[in-house]
Length: 307
Image (cartoon, rainbow, N blue to C red; front, side):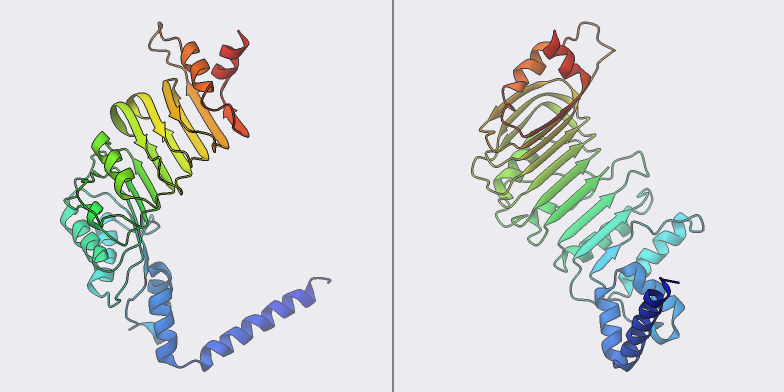
């Protein structure tokens, strides 16, 4: 019984909100729904409400990550995405998230991306892990001036160093299941002066990852996980505060890590190589993280330091 007044109050508040919505002119309500609602909510409103069945699509948040369901085939999913872009009337697209099997529809995906690039896009998330094949996108992301967040999975990414305006506003970069070139990393830290965090997960590299960011003041977080072919990490980032590494013990060569507050070192055992002894590497790497406030690690670290 004690909860009844609260429920009644919530019900009254909901009724007031509905009455308020009904008093707003249709054109204003349509503008709010078409512009500020995520595209999934907008499409749902168009289906369920006759009032908004002809509402134009101006949503700035084109998030298609949850578009798959048991009832929808790949063909239906592609049809919905095409319909949204064909009917799009907005001047800006701030967010584009797509998780899809790209095989056979590469041209349609590229068309959607190009539309977003022409509408002041700020965040792009492309996940093509539903296919085992990495998608080749003939688009130079490094030429995009408005982009702040870029997350690519199973999607080729290269950045050229001669794009003075490209990715100047980029704050977060996440690459997964991608071949990462040394030249790309160099270009990223040369051009992206506002960069705050970098994630490289399940990527491929050749021997060394070199990050030279002595002038960066906003670069705070670096996550490296399960990177094949990586044996040395050379890091010069005085502003770095959080470092996470998951993989075999490899050589760290860090410069100016005085601001590092948290380190997560998840060392894996390499059972395939009986001669592999990580002891010296683990001990030497500790020299670079002696000032951290929080250290999370695995039993390899404890075993090495105990014996």
